Image 1: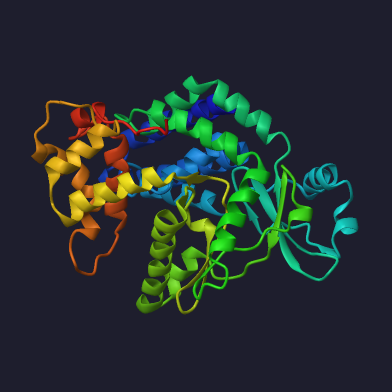
Image 2: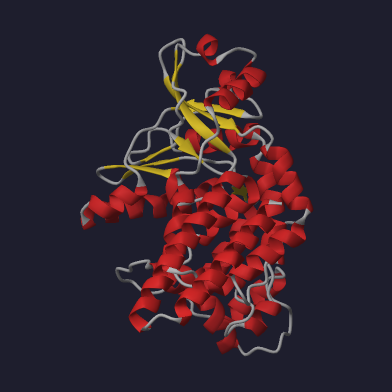
Length: 390
């Protein structure tokens, strides 16, 4: 098993590293530690990238944590956000041929065999249709559905792997969520339907865009859409002015919450590789394989929670609401102040009328409050749950 082999290599490497440290002075030990972290991070990222599927998805998620991982490990895993190792051109052609019934050069006027993006489920190629439209063609990795089924069938391995990386974290709920969401992501017709929903709603919007789906060139394992262009997230962070960054951030914020309140839909895979940026706060949103759709009554409950917490500052009412929907056990032995201390964090940046910067530290604390069963909020986490649609 790949996970077992990776663990064995890392274990052997750690033993060698510890032996080297034994005879080194303090400065040399620090240098050795840094080298070891860099080497280990690169090896884990490479292994997860090659594995695709569930474990690569976990690597992407782990890369968003600001704390809890050594910086070299986090930086290495961040490459999985948009630059995973691709499959061979021949394999991509075979999948496309089996899905569309013809070779790429028979289907398209032009076809680029070199992918422009590769991720956990599939990779994307540029092409031009017979009627002259530039398109992006996402092709699912052959066998990834069987690989993911095998990963999900052996849930204990996933649980143990996450548990080793994050001591104190209770991984079982995350694994259960991954099972459901990844199964949905494997069907590109589901993704096409999601993308059509967003594309139609935001058509002609001044700064939010979603590429249209090319229906006649899309199947359960091939998704063809309009080709979008723009600057990648890491280049925006590195080179754009603070004003342009703020405009882009506002566009993302408006997209997320307008979609939730007006469209009753949430794109649940918002990692940096799924955005393309242009000056003036114009953002193109990609990848709609993981979308949560809400009923009107569910959105109404979220609005009531927001009003109670952030507008009325009525923690007793907030508690009554979350108990009524099963988010917190009724009558759990917590004071309202303890409930406020835990849940108030999620509303922190909308409770004050001021400019706020969403820092990596704030984002990491948000993740930790969902999953850190060994931390300061362990007891309230054990009484909390994510309510499911009835």
